[in-house]
Length: 276
Ligand code: NAP
Image 1 (cartoon, rainbow, N blue to C red):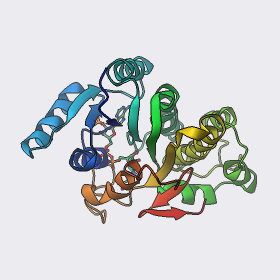
Image 2 (image 1 turned 30 degrees about the horizontal axis):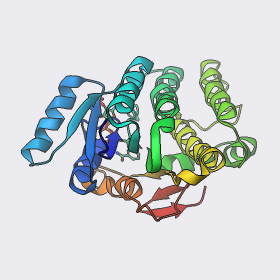
Image 3 (image 1 turned 180 degrees about the horizontal axis):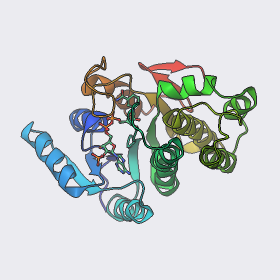
Image 4 (image 1 turned 90 degrees about the horizontal axis):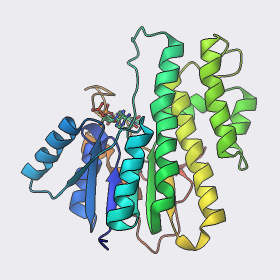
């Protein structure tokens, strides 16, 4: 088994994830894994970084596929006995003018952004080694979508005692409510992406609390963040930040020094803790 520290970035064949891997290759003292759901796209991305003279490794990972997540888990367990840095970056968004019915957009978006990310956490968090770092890439849109929720939902999402099961129930209810066209009446905002990212931010707050309760001595720091508005296939060419600039906050959180006791359980943008 290798004692080398290891970092894994989900959805990193392009966009912000690719830029996070590039930065980690330059700054993380260990093995860095670029992962992609499509091995062809993943290997192409690896080749690009190798052309830049960087040393990067590849593993397949589709966060929608539990078998794929578990294959990565078993690989990390066997080869490294765990992992040191996990960046949950993989995500999807329908374009604003997409005509796919809202209920379908809700189901598909939540499936990857919330349920897929949660499944990765369920399988990989127990493997994170002491002093490890976990970064969940959310979005400022989670804050604005929270503002668009009913007062009752806002209270639930801001609660310091909400459980992961309760959050899963709420995310499932959103999808069900969109199918019955009652989501607005039920207090939800009209954004599937926004609700999925509320899920990611709240999940991060819950997971950080669980780490405090169950693995207090392990000094693991887990946070959610927004990369900013970044020029990628998701956000388009008008966005203000380059992918490398978008990677800055996630990389800052992934590389917090081992004597740092925070941030933990926070939501950050531009390397600054934001209120939730
Ligand atoms: P992007 O260019 O569309 O890249 C998304 C990445 O996620 C791609 O590598 C994609 O792989 C991967 N992915 C999607 N579904 C996956 C799955 N089921 N399993 C594994 N990988 C999957 O988007 P981006 O702008 O870099 O976004 C990265 C993250 O930042 C997302 O979580 C996004 O919500 C968040 N974010 C972005 C912005 C922005 O302005 N760009 C702002 C706030 C937050 P394929 O190539 O196979 O599709």
